[in-house]
Image (tube, rainbow, N blue to C red; front, side, top):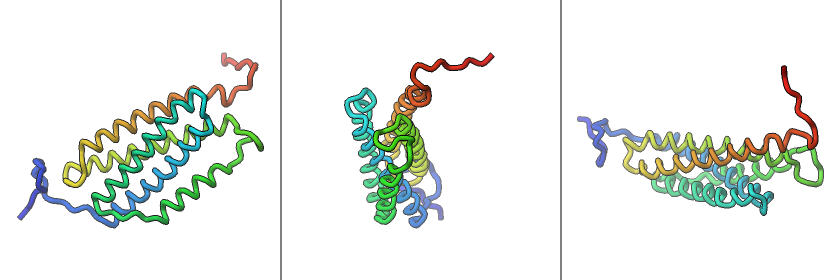
Length: 185
C-alpha cells in the first residue's frame, strides 16, 4: 500500500530522507555559512565608513540571519550540528586572511576584490542549498516551502549586490592610477 505524506496534495508515495546524507549535506552548508558570515563581517569592518562598508553592514546581518535559519531548519529536521566542521570552517576563514596580497602592512585593493568574489561564490553555494531543500519540500512536510522560497530570493538579491560591488571594483583594483588603457584594434 502506498501512503502519501500528510499535507501534500502531490499524491507521490511517502518518501524518507536519508538522515546520514542529509546531516552531512546540511553540516557542510553550515560550515560554509560560518565561513561566509565571518568573511562578510570582516569585510564590512575593514570597509567601514565607505559606501561599500555601509552596504555590507545590512548584508552581513542578512547572511548571519540565514545561518541562524539554517540552524533552525537542521533542528526541525533532527539533524545534529557537527561542531568539528563548524570549528574547522571558522579556523579556515581566519587562516584565509593570512594570504599574501601584495602588501605587507596595509590592506590591498586586491584583498577587497577577492573577498567580494569569494562572498559572491559562497552566496551562490547557499542558494544551491536552498534550492535543494526547496525541491525536497514538496514531499517532506518538515521543510517549509514558503520559507525556502523567501531564502532563495534573498540569496539572489545578495548575489546581485555582491556582483555589482565586485564589478565596480575591477578597474579600481587592477588599473594603475593615471595609466591609459590600451585599446585593441
